[in-house]
Image 1 (tube, rainbow, N blue to C red):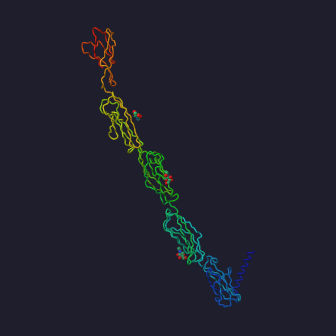
Image 2 (image 1 turned 90 degrees about the horizontal axis):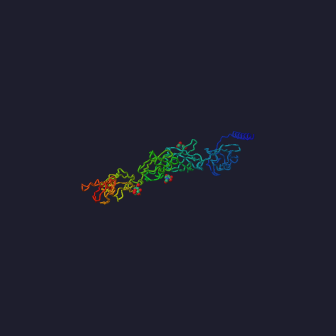
Image 3 (image 1 turned 45 degrees about the vertical axis):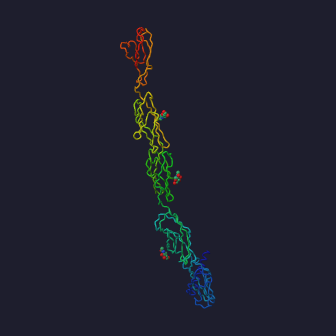
Length: 533
Ligand SMILES: *[C@@H]1O[C@H](CO)[C@@H](O)[C@H](O)[C@H]1NC(C)=O
Ligand SMILES: *[C@@H]1O[C@H](CO)[C@@H](O)[C@H](O)[C@H]1NC(C)=O
Ligand SMILES: *[C@@H]1O[C@H](CO)[C@@H](O)[C@H](O)[C@H]1NC(C)=O
């Protein structure tokens, strides 16, 4: 109810006012007057008396005054002179905001007789405000491979002033990549736009900080600034690159399983996953897969099994580094196995004769070859036998040797020889192999049996019984076997008349002598005969 009443009263006032206007035949206009904002109190605007064509005192006698509806009393009228002066400093921004032009309406009222004049005071803008960015710091993200000409709108600056005193232009601090363009909005405001002029490379410059300046059109112009931080986003535009194209490594063949062969390393200039590298062998052979392993994360390459110079002397494999974005780089590993003297020489008999006959000059007893799979000095060998033996080692073709007798051997002097063939290599340390052979000397019947005595004297009593054992002869033979088997026999007597065979006999096997019949001392005192062996 009360609101309704208030409303009614205001309507009524307006109604009265219009009635008044109509009554007095209003229509006359004064001005327009204008003043720049922020003008100090007392500033002379106009002389109303002169403008109304009134005499000097008429203003005061007619009771002239000015009416500001709903406004502060920005003007005052000096009735004595008719001068219209600034009463209160006007602030255009407070009065009109962004509305332009900024016009204040007021009336000049004469009471006696009643007369009303419409008047306007235009408050002109002065450049008393600077542009201000509400966002003092802007962050702009842009991928590093963005095409030239790409435009990134930025926040605009505000300026309370109007018209040309508002923001007119934007500038960016000096840089190689961007320029800034000023764009018009339909309402007349202007906003800045960043335009890429030169390609970005995150690896070279991951961040660019620029100062954006907004300038208004005042004279001199006022300005406001904001920081623009440009973050260049990574694009996987770099493939991993190895520190070396070729890694040449030597490792001794006796290196333990698990030993580090080499630590390969690749670099990727990209960031995040695009720069995260994993290592692997590139199309490894089966042999490589069995022998080497690579650590996916660190690039350490280690032995998976022991290498053997004698089997494989070198390995070659490509190593691939792949980044999280799928780009890859390669390098080559050349692994040379270094020989270690880990193999003793080996003797291989090709021919061996034993026993060998005695009395023969220079017989080939054995033919053998010597080998050592190591390389260099590790594989060079020297062969020898004991030097107090009647044998000789004679080098033959390639690694072959013949073992020959130095001279004719005598079985009766020595029937068996133990020969140690010693082969050493020239490596460090020297490795030695011994090969023992036993050579037997076979018998040749080169010795005649020999009697223990050159003559034997046996005594027999006469009238002996027949087949009496009268004694023995004995012969020995230095030969061996059948060659040493002695048989005895009676030699034919010197006197062919002597019936030796009827008198004595000899056991062919053991040399025992027997008298075959009774002997008669008176007929035969001495009987002499020969025995053969
Ligand atoms: C923006 O408007 C101004 C006048 O207010 C004009 O001179 C300028 O060419 C316009 N710029 C663009 C990009 O439209
Ligand atoms: C190999 O290199 C990687 C880095 O490149 C490092 O983390 C690792 O410790 C190295 N390994 C050895 C055994 O030096
Ligand atoms: C060879 O013979 C020597 C002495 O006769 C002996 O010390 C050595 O152990 C033997 N070597 C072999 C391999 O039988």
